[in-house]
Image 1 (tube, rainbow, N blue to C red):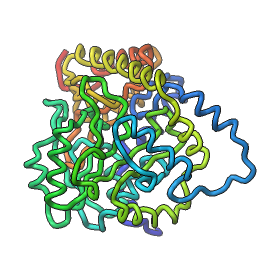
Image 2 (image 1 turned 135 degrees about the horizontal axis):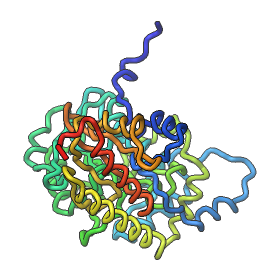
Image 3 (image 1 turned 180 degrees about the horizontal axis):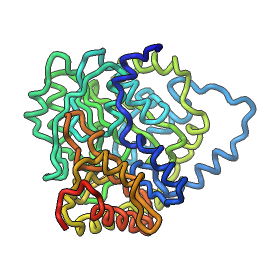
Image 4 (image 1 turned 180 degrees about the vertical axis):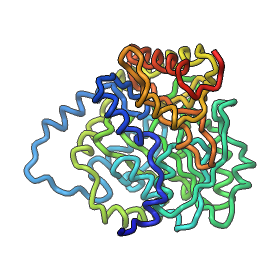
Amino acid sequence: MTKLSKRSEAVALSPIRKLAAFADEAERKGRKVHYLNIGQPDIKAPIEAIEKLTSTEFGVLKYCPSKGLTSYRNKLPTYYKRFGISIQPEDILITIGASEAIYLSLMACADPGDEIIIPEPFYANYQGFSTMAGLHIHPINSSIKDAFALPSVTDIEAAINDRTRAIMLCNPSNPTGYVYSKKDLNALAKIVAKHDIYLIVDEVYREFIYSDQEFYSALELENVSDNVIVIDSISKRYSACGARVGSIISRNHKFLSAVLKYAQFRLSAPLFGQILAEAAIDIQGSYLTEAVEEYNRRRLHLYNRLKAMPGVTCYLPEGAFYCFVELPIDDSDRFCQWLLESFEYKGQTVMLAPGSGFYASPGLGKKEVRIAYILNTNDLEKSMDCLEHALLQYPGRTIIN
């Protein structure tokens, strides 16, 4: 039989999407599946941006510049200025979603065999892109006991070796909802400056913070401009996941020039998505405010339901729209598949993301799941009804009722 590449065999299945076939089968059997496994908002995209896209007249659908539409790159700094961040168009490269931004950044800053330090649990795709680039993730474990706060900077620095090229994190965190503070980021800045490595920060959830803590961007760090790489996207901000428009932002133009080499091979990011993204920059006021308020209602509803369930360990996430929860079960992969294959409550079930896929350390996350609170509170209530009854019926539950 013709062989596959070792790289293909090494890449793990996505914990977010790998159970999709079981969900499809559950729906084929007539069950209603509540999808809490993926960060797909149900809030509508801003109508003004949609109208701008649909009213644009096209003759020839041309390639965009590999860096991104010039008009979009020229306008994007005005968005960051609202956060007190000063960047220039030449600091920006537009990508096919944040996913490509992550992959191209890793390809440009590290060689096969190099290491990236990441607090775990982390966004599962970091593992996939690292494997594709031939890189190793050196995980530093965080704990649900303190809501997955930043691990000790002493432990992080102790993990640095000759092959370390970057420290990477998501702020606010996907999958935990933890918000890294100004103090956290400044502590990391000292480490990257001392060892002259990169600090890659995925900031796609910057607007979604529910505590009094203010968002602090890595772009605000002083004296480490050449070390900082920020990943961003319009997917969550404007509920526009399908637009596939992200960005890499860095004041290190040598790094961006390296990324551009890869970007030129893939030609360009989507034209339609960039037109929508450019129009969305003008949207201020109630759209994002109302979206954050809605997600906060969902967050509180989810938390109150979870903490009332026997044996469930949870916390109140500060940002993004995820909660990483420990359940009284034997194995989260088995449980999440069982929910779709064998369980239903009033003709419904729920799809969750198994926790093990968000760790690089073997054996961790076996009792944990990521829950995305991206459904309206009515559907979220039905989802939690399903989960509560499932935990009472699951053959591999670890508490006696």
